[in-house]
Image 1 (cartoon, rainbow, N blue to C red):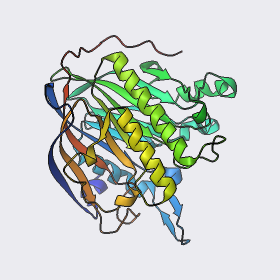
Image 2 (tube, rainbow, N blue to C red):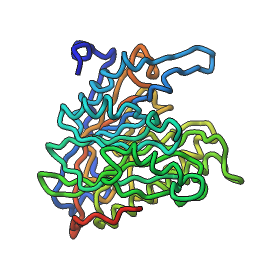
Image 3 (cartoon, rainbow, N blue to C red):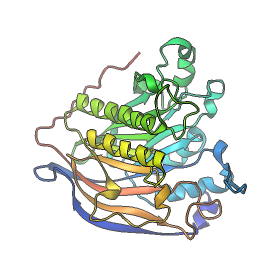
Image 4 (cartoon, one colour):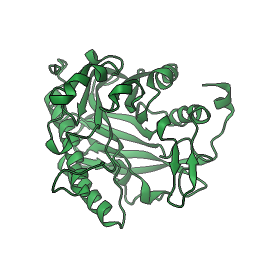
Length: 359
């Protein structure tokens, strides 16, 4: 980090809240592994300027906040770092975080093909002291192999890092999502200590599409998004090794609220994660962690319930203001982190042969 960042102090306080909560299936698990995962929507540069409902303007500035973003990531001491809205992977996040022992992977969204090098996407960084990457995988909403999209496939694949050849690519097959640029990124990891396998994934679901499929409401479309990506992740994990621990982190653009549309969307989200046998790690304790900005939190860390032994601790960021602003935080989302104890179900064996890549 630059000397400016080393000297800077974020105008906020942080605290770790320890919970001792057994997850479902906590008994009978073998090879318990403790790890920390964080998720952070880092606000891509093109979205820095925001016009509020009252007409006021909020504007973050990349050059002023980029080092603070990394400082915020590093203070989590995470083994797995999931980032959304990344548009400076090669020229900033990857070279900087690699100095601290992280290996990074990046997939852009399937949009802006004429300026694809500037398109934001998802990144996962893994601390190589503890984990090795065995296989990268990504899922798209759009089937880039068909119709008008085919001509853009190579442009998009050329932006995947470290290279598309390292990835298994699963192209979209859900008709309701065929016009959406969303992608999900996953890494099959192996612990260097216990050799236990894990699938860690990063997602950023669409907030408000420009148009809805005929006959479908916004809340229904959000549920379909969740179901498609979560089911795809679980299917991939089971193909690799049955009952493999799964972590899904990211910006799901869904939050509990009294607003009818959002309430319906959150109900659909809750159903989708239950169907995928996942649990919200921030809601796994005896009571929800009190936090500011609670009505607008859309970022989640989900874990497979059959493998989650307990949520050891989670991170709450406390700001002086009700929500992030340019003067008090380097992004419009708060970072979230969870320290988990996970185990393998008896009988699990890790399939070390990667599944065949899509062509």
